[in-house]
Picture 1 (cartoon, rainbow, N blue to C red):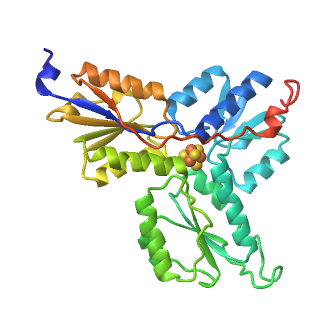
Picture 2 (tube, protein in one colour; picture 1 turned 135 degrees about the vertical axis):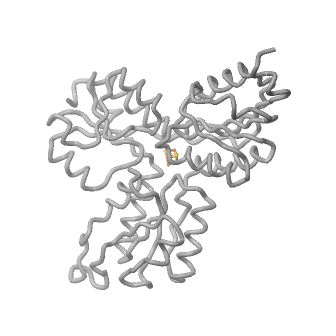
Picture 3 (cartoon, rainbow, N blue to C red; picture 1 turned 90 degrees about the vertical axis):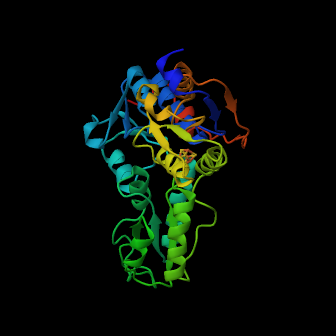
Length: 339
Ligand code: SF4
């Protein structure tokens, strides 16, 4: 018996379901791979196409070049917009620079962009619930440009900021809007459902006339993975989430477990697993954020077994069958196009 096994008399592993890749992440990775196959390297990608170091490193090795700003890309090159979406200004800049753009924005993020446009066209100011600095928030808020719609252009439309960001119920209390009767809200797709509900309740209490999105903005993958953690965490005394530090939905999974009173850690890969976390534990739950590949989950399980874990039990969960189509301008492009 090894030293670590002597610290862990009986340790089993529960695997949450569903976990890992969602349809939007699958699609975004395929878009980069197909662009590389069709047009050859380099293919520029604005921002990490999905927030996972392993995925980004693999694509980089195949010839993808990740940049934060379009001015880092030579004129006339090919660019892919990340799954998080981009502002109108970024699209306009890509056009102005003569870039050929393929859009890996998740269709569920695009759905929120369309909602924002409709709400704004209906004369409403919009409150976005999300995390400051996250690229999805920048892209969604960037569907409304400051002063885009002037009061004298469209009757009844205030020339206000157009869209405001709130992160917490506290932010709601200090918000100043043009007209509380012409207000709507949208959310980032990867929020904690419980935290978002608190902010939405605060908004409804302060602005009873506020318009909600037609359907939930928090996506199916985020909801399913959070629900699976809630079910699994009840039976665990430790939860490990596989995900990169900048992955919003992975961070939320760790928080969901913690909010159930369970010790939880998020790790990029098995090398970050600390043996001392396992001391005195009996059941360890494992899941992965929507951008984390299954290979990393398998490596974590192998490491846990090396540290003395025994049985692995895969939990039942919602079966996801969502598949998103690839952008038509990519599927129809011949390899001579672009560049
Ligand atoms: S987490 Fe949701 S919104 Fe984000 S890429 Fe996946 S399906 Fe789309």
